[in-house]
Image (cartoon, rainbow, N blue to C red; front, side, top):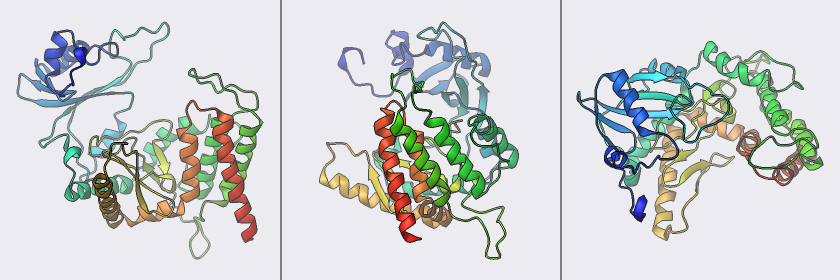
Length: 374
């Protein structure tokens, strides 16, 4: 904050009135206050802990600003096992043309979601317990288990799959190995372009070279060999194969933020590509053999902290696999496919020759392993 003092996550409204908004230069809090007042017919008495609003009519609410759609909330609200918050108001984002104005004059470029705040404590990740992690594991299992109807899947996947890749012939969207192969190959084709092409990223001036292109060729050769069969014992394809059914991918799953993110880039996936990531003080992850681990511990973490992380991550994954054994099966079966998907998804502004060169070397080693086994 101004003057070097640490923000205590409280009384944001008083700070805004004094001209000390934490969001200055990003967006105008007063615009959000006026929008809530207009739609919910009540004054904002205070803003505590970020975007938790106290209204004059006694309602507590939480506002979220993002670029997502309300379709996911409607989907979750229809499942009685998933405790979706009551949505009081939402508005879809509007895209403006140039010139861009910083900070924005309004909030129209972001989706606005206003939820009724449920009873209970917030910030509980600072006081982790095994019981809390068991609840989080149950939520993770419920999200993985959630059955998505065809209309929902088709609506979200069609715009991002068919037009992306002129190399791959468009396929009907099905929960199948064949579609998953095309899905991964399409991601490789649209992520790694042709030799000499620019990356198209405003933040860098990199271009794709021969190494990147060779890596893509290796990936395209490897992908069909690392996805398990979707046929039954009698040889027919299982149309409801648990590894290839579509699941919602949580963009930031953790006890600090239990909202769902469906993004045109990576939010709706075949189960075999799903990521069991769980965020707390550190990130809980699973390796290709579904064994638990953690990453992103701070340099200041003490030995006792690491002991606690090891205990908590083990407890979380034991609870997750107990709640949803198919999640563990998907992680084990998708070891290499998930490595490819996450590497393609997570590339941002790194030098493509170096980044994809490493991925291509890995792919060639996998191909050699497969050839030696035949």
